[in-house]
Image (cartoon, rainbow, N blue to C red; front, side, top):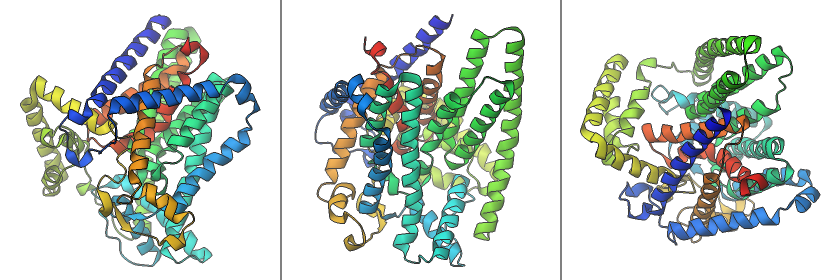
Amino acid sequence: MRRGLNNVISRIWHVIMAGIIIIIMFAGKIPYVSFHKRPFLLPNIIFFIIGALLLAIINKVFSEERTRRINVIVLYAAMLILPIFVAMGAMFITGWDAGGIFMDSIAVARGESITYDYSSNPNNMLLFVLASAIVKMAMKIGFTDIHFLYGSCVALQCILFGITGWLVYDYLHVLRGKRIAVIGAFIYLIFIGVSPFVYIVYTDAMGLIFPVLMLWLSKRMPEDKTYKVFVKWLLILMVGILGYYMKAPVFIMFIALFISFCINSICLHTGKKLALDIIIVLMVIGLGVFFKTAGMNIITTAFEYTSGTTYDTERAKSIYHFLMIGLNKDNDGTTNPEDEAFSFEINNRSERITQEKKRCKQRIADLGISGFGNLYIHKIALNFNDGSFGYAISGMDYIEQKFDDGEQLFGNIVKKIYWPGRGRFFIWINYAQMLWLGILAFALRYKVENENDYPAVIALVGAILFTMIFEAQARYLFIWSPVFVVLAASSMSRKSMN
């Protein structure tokens, strides 16, 4: 039964990934929203081959003998230093939601009013509370310049990026040994460790750590006693709930771990052990409901205290708003003024949800089978055909407030690569695309061998389905990039290669 299940999960993963890669290969000819398209220097098939060859070389270079001599401390240091290098050289304040939230955090620290609409976008309340706390602390220390205040928030993200890289290494070390762990850490360094998202203070970067942290807890927390199993799940649940309020799709990882636990219980346990697992399942479900409600109450209270305003639940966007956007074939399921205006103009929440449901049903009826197929092909191309995960897609207006070259370390060199509109910006976009397609190539080869392999695969399948059903955005995949790296590195194990 277990072997058959492993094969079924592997086949599902291979079919999904093969379909995605095929669509990416022809993405240049797919007429999805031009706003999200990138002008790459080479066809994706060439990037795919080069990226796969590069990762194959990395696999060859990091032999068992070489990796034994690698000092892990050096690896950890690089995971922290590289993001700092990128951030200090290129950071700027954006003009969209991320920049608005940061400017609000400065406003409340100065006793001024906020301008961003958090009632309509409650998913940003936790980030606002966190950013405000950091800014206030920086001001108490003596920092008043906006450069240093923003840098304080970016510093936290640099630390989180470094910790995430360490979690990737340690998780792989537990499951696959040091060689694969080093390979995974190196791929993380050259792909995520140098990502410009490190200096974009927003939920995408802040949420990066949560999926991997839950994976790591699932393997590192002891289970030799009943109470330890309960403590482990309590910690994973708390991380999942916190991650949910930072970036909602993060909770998919908790669901994947929970599903894996249930599968293992059914396949491996009987009698008292199975009964104990059922009790744990019921307790986790009960605590999950409690923590979700309590978490929202705590965050809302903290937000109202910090901002001096009241959170209006009537204006909060519902899940049907994002489903409605995801079904918009004219805009390929991505955010658009038409759907935003439709929801915004209906003040009563109950009536708004009713109208959103009606529009969803109408769009489903209008699409038909061929319409769904066409929409999903466009959404896959939009989501996956960008190794930079939608960084700076709007061009120069993406930058709201620049910092002078003289104020930053490594200013001119790094800015030329990471700032849209600068002469060498194409280097980062094409480099990221090449590595991303190489990672997908090796992730395609990943095969489920035992119960330890379930969570990562199930989580990524869930994340892919999420972007297919709801609003499409390439940056929504960024929080899952370390998990893709985990799968790509794992496929390089000697057993998988054979």
